[in-house]
Image (tube, rainbow, N blue to C red):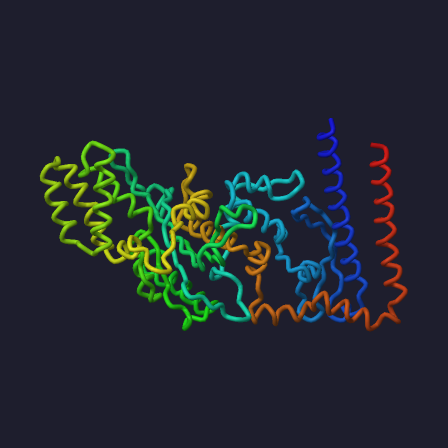
Length: 465
């Protein structure tokens, strides 16, 4: 009973908010109709309804269409002042809610959460909104003074998603139940090490972390590393950095970043332990003690840089295994040798080398919204959503991202001069307040009276309830 009443009161308040917004917009339209400055260039043609979905619900209001005296162009000046395109159906705040919900859940649920009211948008609308976003270069905002650190850390990994199609629908091929529709989404993050959290001193978090990523196929990898390098040069005193440690699993596109950033490669702990355990399981005998002893021996050879002993052990052990097991052992050893320098840096625990958290970050930043549940993507959708998730993880404002899509070009700015801005109208009305004072005071009284009446009415409803 109580929760039902709370829900009903919330809906009443949301409807009331919509009424207030409609009232305000129509009064702004009245101000336009009565503006002497407007009369100099535009005259009234007709009036029509416009509906737009806001974060509190759908609003419908009356606004006026005007005709330019010189060009005979027609325009809804109220739309121009608020930056609405002719067929705008969603406010910027609603778009921001949709995009923020889409990075955390499915398109369908994001459409259900488009506003606080009962209005909904379709998942196709959510998809179009996500794909329309042009996400700027990632990282944190500009700093007034460059940060000084001794060691800087760059970590990289990738998430694997499934495409619905590669270039066009129906082009995915299948062989023995396996499809060739795999795609990797790349993630890179820069940080200054670990620090304790205030909530729980036993838990640690990355210090001043900034995320980057997306699909970045082929030659676009250089663009990704260019963004990371530009961020580091923008945020840090690079001359004071002794070392940039690059931690990853040693993939080819990741090693490209090592060269571009001038970093020192360190293989992450997860993959070292994975292959050492595999080798010790294959060549350490049947007992747990034997396997532990073998793993210890392998790590000792790596720490001392004794590749010869490692290769000889693999050769001798493989001879006693089946062909399949011997191949697995050789592949594990080959991985260790391929990343030899990075493995040794980790095993020797060089100064400044800290633990890596790539696997958990892939899970939290990308997998949670893109691959942890069965999902199929287009390349465009996957690229856009991954970039938006990273933008969101960087703590950036979704409303600013939506508004950035409408940044004016020089041509649009020149066009806007014909319509004059809201501030220009208000400034002009203020300067000529002596001539228009009676009108302005009457307008204020007209606004205040209905709002006051509505407030008293809703207060009465609340008292009755």
